[in-house]
Length: 354
Image 1 (cartoon, rainbow, N blue to C red):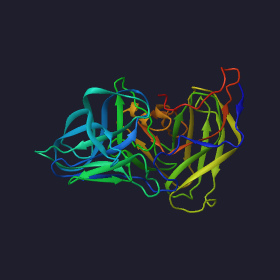
Image 2 (cartoon, helix red, strand yellow):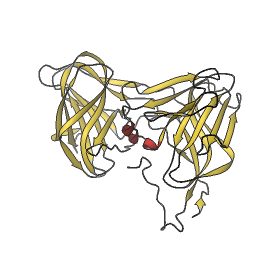
Image 3 (cartoon, one colour):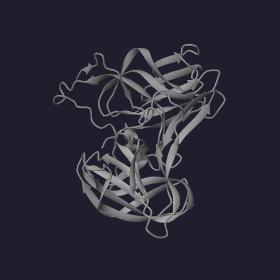
Image 4 (spheres, rainbow, N blue to C red):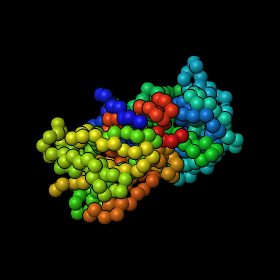
């Protein structure tokens, strides 16, 4: 089985919904404060199965309510929900800045690529005054999928990444490009240095086929000109396969930005084997962002799924892994198996494993 990679360089995992060079993202929100007002999202399902739950986040809340949550078809006329409920439930929402899980009364059977709408609505009486979160960032907003509001009977499409996730009845999630299935307050930003605990932060990752890794990328949210030691570690977590020292002056700007760095040579990684990529500060601190999900399975709603998560250590000690968090960084894939001797062509699957 050979690795091929002529003119191939793919960042993995990609930085979903976040434009390279952007500042730390943050959740925005839609206010629903009148009877039957609603908001939600329109998107395609990623796989066939039975959808049992919908996860969404509340922002600021003045008055709680028992919200109506439905999955509907999509109107060919308006592009909003078509009013025909395919799955329904209610959920009492009484707290601000929390993740909410709506469990449908019956699981909804869907096909892969099915166009649906999730609708989150105030009741007709005893309605609330509360915010439902999504994510909007300049240059990072999607035309599809999209969020929407139904306020005073008027449909408005919102160019934003919905903070919604769907759980199937087997407990699985699937990566749907454009959705941001983070927990409430799930966009993170942290600063670390040689004197902090931890002093090295990165990702633990694996892919389901042999690959070559030729470099790393990371999205710095501040101090973009600081000295950074970027390392690729073997499966033992100690042996350095590739390392790049990012010079303090060799950047275009000192503000937020993405760095792509290449090693002198690519390094072959085995299939289904965990490796680590991590950053160490030089004399000054590093600040970069990340994401957090409510439970490890929800990480499958992002590229790479649960196979990419946070790892950290202090003073070259033992690594500690956190499966519900991920920093904004990844590797550059420069070669893939051609499938020779292994049953023919090896396609690139959904790397979340779903």
